[in-house]
Every structure is written in C-alpha cells, then in structure tokens.
Image 1 (cartoon, rainbow, N blue to C red):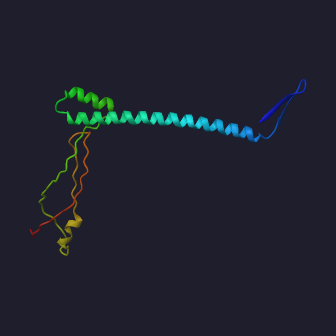
Image 2 (image 1 turned 45 degrees about the vertical axis):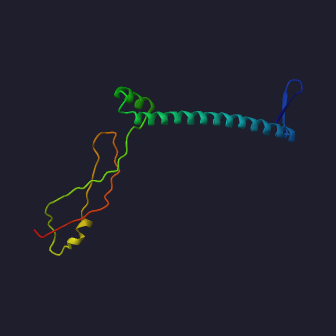
Image 3 (image 1 turned 180 degrees about the vertical axis):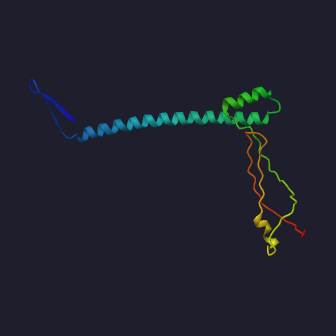
Length: 144
C-alpha cells in the first residue's frame, strides 16, 4: 500500500506494509470474486451440458426416425447440429485368394502365412469409417 501525503508543493509517497485488517479485507474481496466467477462457470457448464443433452436426444431421434423423415430435413438437421447418424454393424468378410507363389527350393511353405498379408479398405463413401482387423489366415497349398 502507498500513503500519498502532500507537504505543500511536492507529493511524498511513502510505502508502508499493509495491516492485517487490510490483508484480510483484500483476501475476502478476492474470495468473493472467485465465488462469483465459479458460480458463473458452473451456470454456463450446466447450460452447455443441457444443450448437449438436447442435441444427443435429437441425434437419437433422427437415427430412429430416419426412414420417416424427409431426406432434405434430416440432412439439414445433421448439418446444423453436427449429428453423427451412422450405424455400426459387425461384419465378417471371407475372401479367397488363389494363385501361384514361386519360392526358393528350401523355403518352408508352413511359413507362407507369416510372409503374406491381406488388406481391406472401406471406400463406400467419404463419411464412412471401418475398423477392420484380420483375425485368421489359413493357407492350403500344393506343389504346382
């Protein structure tokens, strides 16, 4: 704290340590300010949570009623609210490859599965996603 005093023409500023009462007053003021800010934050967090719950409910409604809502309207809702109206499906894909593999004479054909890999990509449309993993590869072989 600063104690300005005036002695005629020149002001003299003398610093002095604050009193306990001044410190307690400042701490009380800061605590009140912090309480007000915390209260505001809690209010806006609750409002944001409520709005997100409404958007989540709308998203579920659009998913459930997708076949009954006009496509243009449902697309507008998706665009405005950033909804994800995709569906998840568990899929099993069985693919058979056939061909001829040329290997050295001393190659152990039982190691062929470790030397080959297969890859699946999802390319239906740009917003689609797929998480596909290979869980089994069986190779039948016979000398050509």
